[in-house]
Amino acid sequence: MPTSPRSAAPPHAPDPARPRRPPLQGRPQPSRTRRPAARPPVRRKRPRWAMRVVTTLSVVVLASAGIGHAVVTSLDEDIARVDPFKDMKNRPAAGHGMNVLLVGTDGRDRITEKERRAYHLGGTPCHCTDTIMIVHIAADKERASVVSLPRDSYAETPAHTDETTGAQHNPHPIKLNAAYAEGGPQLTVRTVENMTHLKIDHYLEVDFTSFMKTVDVLGGVDICTTRPLKDSYTGLDLTAGPHQLNGGQALQYVRSRHVDGASDLGRMQRQQRFLAALIGRATSSGVLLNPLRFRDVTRAVLGSVRADKGFGTDELLDLGRAMRNFSPSSSEFTTVPIGQMGYAVKGIGSTLKWDEPKAAQLFRSLRDDKPLTATHPSVRSAAARVEVAPQQIHVQVENATSTEGLGRRVDGALAAGGFRTTGRPATAQEPDLKHTVIVYDPRWDRSARSLAAALPGSELRAVDGRGPVLKVLAGADFKEVRRVRVDTPSPGESSPVLTGDEVLCR
Image: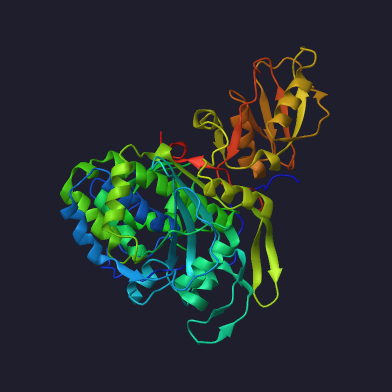
């Protein structure tokens, strides 16, 4: 299939923004400056799952400074307790390392009308988990693996009692995020364990507002984007390039799902980038060495957390001390592989069906405490980040030199890099080009830029009406095809595994 053509992302059906239950003290809308001189305190609405991962991971990282027990012990009192493991039987066998289930719910009871309007937080809450993820802490405490579970994942609940009506339910199909509405934290944990065959060791449920405070206390977070991001639903409006986001801008960034064709999958990748950047800020900003800042950050984070009874101060300190060398490169992020988009289920609607073999392999790696990254980070980092996946870009190669066989060599190298070449290179009408040229229809400019990233030094030549097939006129300067990887996966593609240092601003 040819590439998706346009620069502008196609419109999507509106999805009511999902706020959280923040106590927000409304703050002014932050400006979209790259490096704001002053950090205006920001509104507290509800970012999505990045916030909850960070909520726990940040505390773990912050505790690594070895700051005294007295500073951290008082924070335990701020954590509300829940028992998600009550009376659970026939659970998966424990693996190596620790698995934390992090969720964020859709409560909006403490959001004012003014805040709803300002932050695009209208709509009726579903009282469900709008984000779910598993954070695996390695047994040696030197690596964290974060796996996002899409909220619309097709799931089957075990038999349970409906938390709202008290009705008894037999096992039945459901969207994963609806398990919370039917059976609260316990059904959520049971459903996730049934799907992943991983034993969940701890449960954390986080208020999105606390994350806003955390970002501001840390002084903002650096984010890079390869293209402009604009979403009228959340108010996000970022130019291409690096930005320093404060709490309010961070909220817009992690909530937006209408900036590209990847919808929730693209949003989850942006959340992963944000989390990596927040970890980078926490470990490099000096907050770990400042007891007062440490206290402020952890109070902001833990202000409205609900956790299982076994996750307390001692656990935070033990993990923190063991993770003194933790850094963004120690973290890795991915999304459970999706086998079928738009899997229709009667009475439920459109769901995401996991790719069972690939998902099983992913969770087996977590259970065995193995890294998810398939290649060494230094090799992966050599791949250029692009907007459109090579598999979506259709290319015709022509030899524009007198060098015999150059067309076949370029065609083969592009095909090996994932591009959809015709496999039939031709001879160009321009026989003596010094520089390689990419001829493209302006409507397919994102595809052209992605192809150009794979051909360093190539020139772009726009030709109206050419259509979706891009032409490469191989010039005398051709040396190699550079590996590229998509910045955000298209629906149906497997999400790559990225380490935190790969997504930080350079």
